[in-house]
Amino acid sequence: MSDLPWSSSVATPPFTLRQLAYLVAAAEAGTIVGAAELVHVSPSAMSDAITELERLVGERLCVRRKAQGLTLTSAGVRAVADARLLLRGAHELYAALHTSTDALVGPLAIGCFPTLAPTVLPPLLSDFGASHPRLDIEVIEADQDHLVELLDSGRIDVAFVYDVRLPGRVKRTTLFALPPHVLLPANHPRATDPVVRLKDLIDEDFIMLDAPPSRENVLTTFAAQGLTPRIRHRTGNPEVVRSLVGRGLGYGMLIQRHSDFSDAKGFPLVMKDVSPPIPPVAVDVIWSADLMPTPRAEAVIAFAKAANWPLPAPVPVS
Image 1: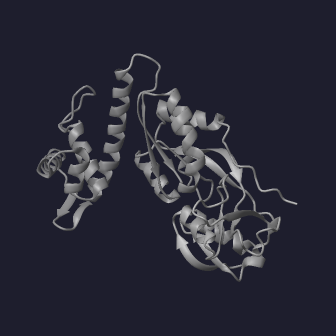
Image 2: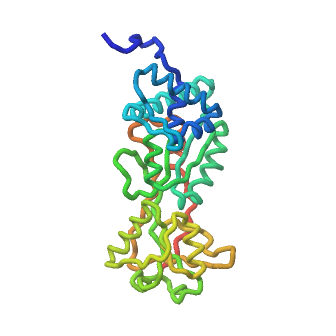
Image 3: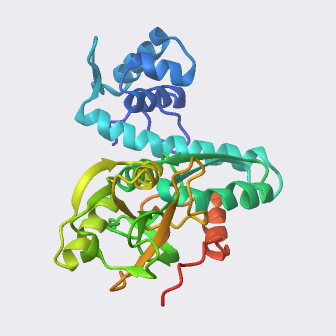
C-alpha cells in the first residue's frame, strides 16, 4: 500500500498549484521578497505558503536567511523541477479548455542568442505573431548556455542558437548557415581588399565577443590557423564590438551579418570574408528533448523550418 496521503488517481494531493508556483518563483528569484514582487503578493503570504507546503510534504525545501536570500535543499531542487512540469501541464490544460477553436492561445517563450535577434525576431514577432494573434509571445535574449538551462527548466519553449557545443539533451533543426567574417574600420589599410587573411591582422588589437559559444568558436578559428589573437577588449554585446571597431580600437569577428555595414553615428565599418575560408556555422532552432513540445512550440518550430530567412547577401569574393 502506498504511504502517500492520497492513493487514487482521482484524489487530490494536499498541496495546491499556487503553493508550487510560489516555490518555483522563490527558486527563480532567489529571495522571498523578489518572488513576492514577481507574483504580486506580500512577502509574508509567499513565505507562509512555502512553509505550509513544507509541512504538507514533510520535507524542508529551502533554507531562508536574512540578507542571504533563499537556497534550495536537495529535496527542494527535486520539488522545483517536478513543480515546473506540473505547472506547465496545468497551463496547457487551461489553454486547451479556454478555446473551442483550433487557434493557438496562451504563452510562448522564445529564447534567442543576441547576435541572431536582428534576423530571427522580426519575422517571428511580425509574420508568425500576426498569424497567431492570441499568443502571448515573450522573448528572452541570453547566451547559449543560459538558453539551454532555460529549456531544461521549461522556462522557454524554443531557442534560436548557433550549432556550436550544443548538448545532447536538446532536439534541433538547422535553419541556415553563415561563415564568420571580419569587421574592420572603414579607414583600415585592408578595408578595400576583397578578402582578408587572419595572419595579416594578428599583430593588431582584437575586439572579442565574449559570450558562449562565440568566444570558443572564435578562439578555435584562430587556433586552426596556428594563430592567437591579441585581445584588447572583451564584451558580451555584438553592438559594442561594432562600435569599438568603428572607432578604430581594433578588428572584430562575428557570424551574423548586418545588411547595413556603416555606423549611423559616423564610425563606418566594412565587413570582409576571410581567406582561407572559415567553415560556416549553422543556426538552429532547439527545444527540450525531455519535455513534450506544446502545440504553440510545434507551430513556431514549423514556421522556423519553412521561413525564408532574410539573410544579407555575402560579401563578394574575388
